[in-house]
Length: 279
Length: 312
Image 1 (cartoon, each protein chain N blue to C red):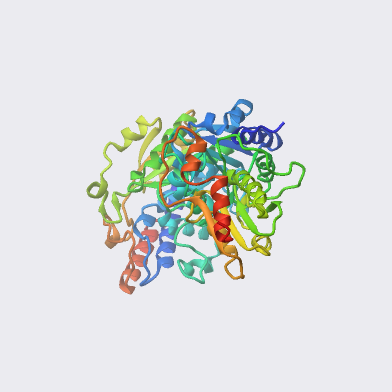
Image 2: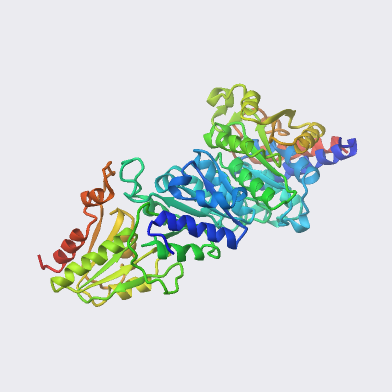
């Protein structure tokens, strides 16, 4: 159980990550704002509290791994790696530019990245492979795979879900960022996947539903996941697409969109205000 | 003793790699008997992963293993390894240039009975087009064993195309081997025949027939189709009056195309391809009969060479 101070610290970091995401995407450039912001608390909880991860030794074999299967929201991972000092802060303006270092999807040339993802549905399989190999090598490493609730329409996710259960991979934790919107609309309208918890359970997983913006609950759920033995755990994280930016919340309009100068200023001001309230 | 059967030789070689290096892992999609990866399972059960009939998941899983420092060997039929899991190969494995080895078994027409859905005649074209991917195709079991030895140290992904049948020994047993090597098996001055896989022995047979008719044929084994030793192709294509390529693959995008790409900026003799026309395969009662249906025979190679030489 995390202390109130620890929870407050992570909440403030989540604000910093959102600020970095908005700064990175900037004005007039298209970027995946909504699905990055829905993940801010989860990314902050993992990178800054839960994971065995030393930023000074971020290639250590026994580090915990953060795999972003929903690779299009890589700005949130870049933000975490910038705050950890792994990606130089000066790279923040180079997202998706020829001269910049930050690719539109996860790329192994970027320091701190763990896999190439973004062709959706592949990250959980990659996580299964890592967890199998690390278990064989007797590494204590834990592998976290973040998926989108639209992404899990990909059949490969369910192939990997079966494999993880078949191999009793308790060193693997899945996190479904259930922000309920995908590229072209609400997930329930575009491609509804009913009985999500039951589906994972029937595939042999331990399922924990959690508010993905409640840092204390997220940390508790992660602790429950890593102490559950013999089966993999998935967190169904209820989140708000575009969380923290009022005009971008609960809409697919900012799934992949650009900001006007006024929107950009408003977004940064709202995030700053949220952080101020956390002091 | 080297097995005559290519997939048996492959399975035995994989076990030897497993003994040499603890990082070698094998993944399988319910075709372990066909691919002969069951031999590895018997000796290294904790490094053998039955992934079920789920090739896409298996392929990305191998990426994860390689990212964690292992050398995974992925096994399934060539058609599924390269087609069903193409995007996983491309994005999970080839983009980050991972040390994954993809064993495409029952390649070409060698799964004669199962027909067009199981015969892979576009796999070389598909694999060759992906950056970072290497493509090798052993001509016999001797060469297969040597190739496998190279796969512990080779950087980046490799597609190894394995025929399911017995193949005659055609490569020199004691000669050192490295990935990328293009080997002249026989010299000749009228026609150069570039061949890969099972077509190497067929080209050698054709060369004997041609010799009896006074035509001297050079036979070159191009067992590494990518990265292609362009200098070797240019060198062996020089000094002859005709060039024939022979492959158990579509005429589009395979060895013939690779040879023509290598020759593109140099003067060269006229070239003709022997391969499978732009069509899907068909079920047959035997391998030889199916090969004959598409002209993958010594007689076709002979006829093609003579036509180029205007000696028909």
